[in-house]
Structure formats: C-alpha cells, structure tokens
Length: 409
Ligand SMILES: [Zn+2]
Image 1: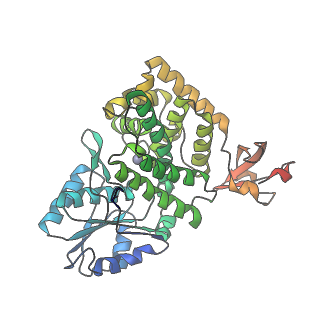
Image 2: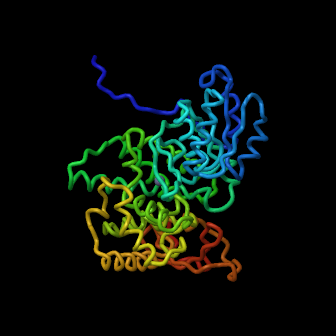
Image 3: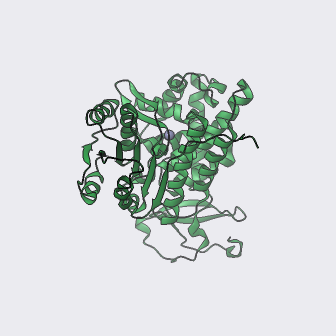
C-alpha cells in the first residue's frame, strides 16, 4: 500500500503536570537528546533562579535571560555556539522560552521548553517573538524538542500573566476566520488539520468551566497552547494563530510599548476583530471567557484611549504585509475605525461578564461582604435567563438565588 499520509513535526516529549520540572534532569541525562552531557540551561527572571537551585548545577551551565529582545537572544546564541553545547533548556515564562528558542535555532541545537507560566502559545510553536529597536518581530525557528509544563509553578506564578495565554488561544478563532476570509477572497489555501488543531484548542479553553488557577483549567490551557503551537508547525506559518488581532497587537507594541502583554493584547484584538466580523455570538463567548479569567477586553483595560487604539488599528495592516485579514477586507477610513472602536467598547460593556460562569451551577453562600464586591450581570447558559450576581476573586456569588433555579444546568 502506498504511503499517502504526510509526516508531521512534533516534540519528542510533552509533559504537562504538577511537579513536571523534576523530569527535566532525567530527560537530559537519558542520552536521547544530549549524548555527551554538554547541556546549557537558560533561566528567566522570576522563578528561573529558584528552579535552577532546585535542579542543582550538575553538568549544566546556566545562563540568565535578561529580556525578550533580539539582542539578548543573539547573545545567548553566541554563547551556546562558543560553548559547543548539545542542547539548551529554556526555563521560565513565554519571553524566556522565545529567547531560548531563537538562540538554539541560531546555534543549531535542540531546545527543551520548560514553561512556568502560560502567557502565550510560543511554548511549543516554531515561532519566536522578540523586541528590537523598531518594535517587535516574529521569527521562524525550530520547534522545541520537548515541552514540559509544571502546573505547580504556573499556579504559583504571580499576577494575570501566568494565564494570559488564554487570550492567545482564543485568538486562534479570529485567525482561522481571517484565513477562511483569505481563502474566499484571494483563493489562499487553508490547511484543514491546522484549523482543526487550532479551533479545538480555542474551543476547549473557551468552554472549560474551571477557575483560572484550578488544576483542571490549567491543564486544558497548557495543552491548548501546545496544540496551538503544533497547528502553526503543521501549517508551516503562524496563519492558524495570527490574524488581524495580532496585527493590532504588533501595532500597539510599536506605538505604545509596554501596553499589555502578548496574551492580553491578543485577547483585546480578538474581541475587536469578532466585532468587526459582526459575529456577536462568538464575541459574547470570547468576551465572557476573558472576563471570567480577569483578562482585559477593551482598550481602556490595557490603558489605551479609544483614539490610541484606533491609531493602532489603522496602522495594523502595515505590520504584516501580505497577510489578508478582516482589517484588509474592510479597509476602513479613519472615521469608520473610530466609530467601530467606540461601538465595540459599548457592546462589550453591555455583555456583562459572560455566559458560562461555573459557579452559577452551584449553591454558594448567600451573604458575602458587599464592600469587596463588584456588581455584575450574567447571562445564563441554560435558557439565557438574565440574573443578577456578584463576582469576586474568580468566582460568582449569588446574593439572591434566582427564581428559575430549576433551569440550572
Ligand atoms: Zn500570539
């Protein structure tokens, strides 16, 4: 029988679990990846040093990654070449992994990604995003040879950055819609497998009902970020994970450096692009997921005015020439962009905090301290009955049980 299937690139090992960082030493010692033991370890700020101490020096040589810049990546790549290392492990958040991926590619050696936060889908992708003197760029690199996600470390990571990758996974829905638009308008070829992987990843995160730091949710998020990276490897480009929303992100990075992380900007851009497409059902779901996990949805929530955001939207197509998205299709005038930025923010404000709060389905204490609460509206997933609830610390609390308790799913 002729072999008509295609071969797909994939890491040798994917390990997502609490305490997974403990598996790095044995992996590097079992001679599958490093035969002579010349191992480098790149660690980022934050948890990098404590993990390095936990692993012990051993035969590995440690390097610190100061920032996610092209300069830092090039310097690390030179050090890896000079040291004749066989493999490098990048331990840290998305930025450390991006720098190490680029450096490993430059040095021509395999790279093991050890993620301690889930800030974007670069933990497994063949793409490295780095800042440079003119903004930020995405570079094609070899995908990691192994991916380790330590859920204990992710859960212990401070701030919303630890799970900001939610926005980057949801951006797959926007990128897929843009890809299909390019197919309809320009005849661009769409890879069905890449779409299947990317869409499944986004849908899994969007509908996972657990709280942001729950083991169940973190597992789904980590696996979805890995699937999203694999989709890009299958497609041979970032197409399944990067559309108009990433163009807006690149423009914001150039115009307003420091306004939001990669995952946060991807989420805000995804909301806006869903609005531009008129897909209000998807907008509702995406907005609800971001709000449920405490991530921004509007320009104001990343510290930008509507005018700032509109300026970024207008210059967004220039950041990625040749990529056709909803922005290129609409080719909006300055006034049209301004109108839609305002209208999108109003629409999002009217959505409240989203349709699928898991705690809606449980009996919860009726009285909580009102001073620390924020009133919210919620749209029920069962029967879409509007009810009034309160949101605190990632959970919904009902001060008055709704009349239609029987309608709960
Ligand atoms: Zn991204």
